[in-house]
Amino acid sequence: MSGLNTPTLRLQYLINWLVTSLLQLRLSGSNGDDSLPLVQIFGPKIKYDRGAAVVFNVRDRNRGLINPEVVQKLAEANGIFLGIGILSHIKIIDNSRQQRGGLNL
Image (cartoon, rainbow, N blue to C red):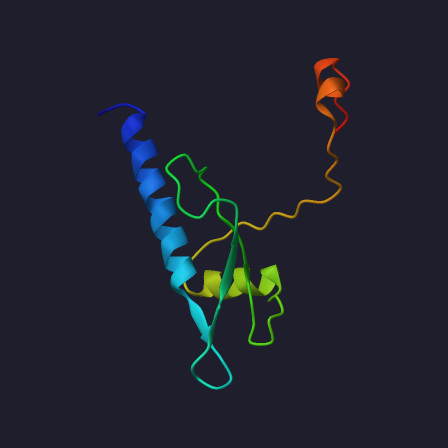
């Protein structure tokens, strides 16, 4: 394999490794026996056709979410660089309107 296939395969392996590693992070429960997932991942967990982005939230012990800016600053302090994206005002258009060219995003 050469050309674009090699970087694509490497990226797929790295993304799958990242998702697997994030899913293994756990918060210990109050009694020490229970554990909760530290990271909530959106989208497919492990797939070979997954894109190059991983969308996730980090939780605290009270099952709330840690502010993404805090997560980003903590990550950068440890040499990990994250991008923050926020989706808002998403509008779903029915398929018949898209086919007529009435796409209004």
